[in-house]
Every structure is written in structure tokens, then in C-alpha cells.
Image 1 (cartoon, protein in one colour):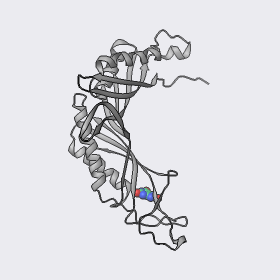
Image 2 (cartoon, rainbow, N blue to C red):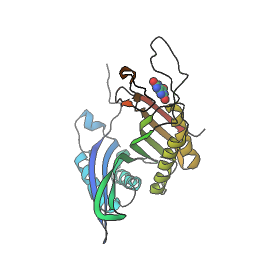
Image 3 (cartoon, rainbow, N blue to C red):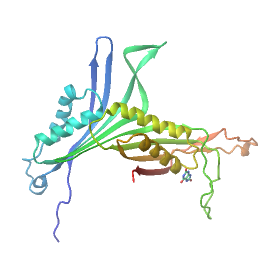
Image 4 (cartoon, rainbow, N blue to C red):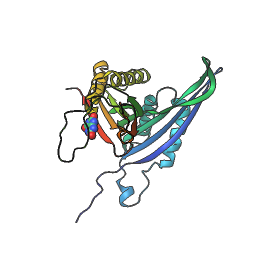
Length: 281
Ligand SMILES: O=c1[nH]c(=O)c2[nH]c(=O)[nH]c2[nH]1
């Protein structure tokens, strides 16, 4: 039997960089986590243990910290583009560099309408993501959001589904809709105002979620994807993952009480998992 190495990639994950930008009257704080992955002519490292073409993952990590000083100045997308390009142009045997960046959101504390110059509060679980893939002749760039916890207390139902001998779920025209949305969209070009676009796309996702009269998570997912693509020509396609974070009406009958859609039990697991990619025809 003949065996061969089919694919390989290597890099450093979870390179956690925090940066303070010191302005005279306030500080800016940024916290990111970077994954670097390189592909290329690394076969002999696997086959005969020849490391002469290996840029150590430790060096990759150091490169990210060093370049953060002067090149992580605005969006994570632009920093990702700089990093991917740096690894490609400085290592001729690297044919593909993938940079994934996740940014934690911090905002300055405010007291009685006055923003504190250097004290921050986490903006919650939501994180902004960017992925840059650069090959010798192509750059693809995607942005996204993870752990976006959103919920609405009405304008959501789920009815007319298949019923069989195992069905116990009750139909409802009025339920809680909660999800931990993960979105990732690919841009058509890499010369864009990424910060501005992120704000616009995030708002389109949230506004559609809020105002959509939902007949299912599936239907709202598609409406959210359409809203982003319809309003942003520079978005090629969008991937959405929307786990159904169930809040199930609690049975108050057992205490002789009515439950008028007021008391629920939030169940973490198992959870429905609805995903979809929306693209242009
Ligand atoms: O919006 C929903 N989609 C489903 O596919 C599904 N399945 C389920 O049990 N509840 C729901 N809700």
C-alpha cells in the first residue's frame, strides 16, 4: 500500500494581543486573538524531518506582536491583510497564508454622560471576526460576528410542521426567539472601509431580526441574509449560524395556575441548529 501526505498546514493559534493607544486625553484599548496558518512547500518536514523551510510557529507569534505596534492601527481586516501579505512576500515557499482575527469588544465607561478616559467595560459576549486568505495571486477577505446573543419576546412562531408518532412539540404562533448568532460574510474586494461596513451590516442583521415576523428560524435567517446582500454590493455572500436557544413555556398547570406565555424554562441543550449561506445568483 502506498501512502502519501494529502494536505498540510501549520501555524500558531490564539496569539492574544492587547494594545493601548495613548492619546493625550484618553486611551484606546483593543484586544484581539490571532490565528496564523501557512500552507506551501513543507512536505519534507513531514517526510524526512527537514525543518529548513519551516518558519517556526514561535516566530510567527513574535511577528504578530511586532507588526501590531505599527500596523494594527484601525480595523482587524486591515491588520489581517498586512499580516497575510507579510508572510507571503517574506517566505517564497509559502503559497497560502490564512489569518483569522477575533476582536473582543470593550467600551469606555460613562458616568452621568461623561466618558471615562481609560476605564473600560466589556461590551458582552459579541466578538468581531476577520479572515484573510492570501495566495500568490489572490486575496479573499471575510468579516463576521460571533456570539451575538439576541432575543425577541414575540413576532415568532413555529407551526404546520410534520407530525408523527414521536411529535410532542406544541404549535405556537407566539414564542420567544433567542439565538447566539454567528455571521460571516465575504467581500468582493479588499480595499474597503471595513469599520464602516461592519457597523452597517451588523445593524442590518439586528434590524431584520427585530422586525421580521418569523414563521421559523430558517425564514428569519434567510431574511437577515437578504437584508445584508441587498444593501451592500460589496458583500459576495453571507454564512449564518443560528442555534435555537429554546425558552420553553413552563407547565404551571401542575400548580393550578395559568401560564399566559409569561414563564419559561431556558434550556441550553439539546438545541436546534439552523445554518444557511445566502449568495447572489
Ligand atoms: O424555527 C424553528 N425551526 C425548526 O426547524 C424547529 N424545530 C423545532 O423543534 N423547533 C423549531 N423552530
